[in-house]
Image (cartoon, rainbow, N blue to C red; front, side, top):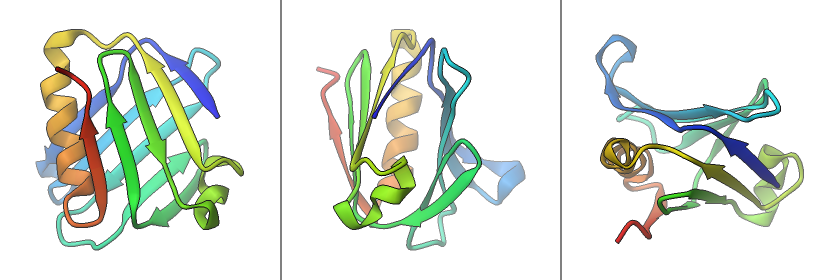
Length: 118
């Protein structure tokens, strides 16, 4: 599955939401993607459109123009039947550090983060 978005929106620690880390975007077709995790939870939540799913073992790769989310085949229902979601983005380079920190917070202890920013 693939989406295109003008930019990724991230918050590594939302004080108003019990320190939840959150990354989201809206595609150029109006689709919404949200990945979040509270610091005391063992699983993260992915919402695609209006369907939230709780997952473990998610692998996320971030580059300057692409965010790749990979899930186990048994969790493919979280991504409308696909085991991966590729989000092509045009996020400004100055914002990538905050996105990276958010992904590290979300995936710490429950998934894998790979950086291709260098």
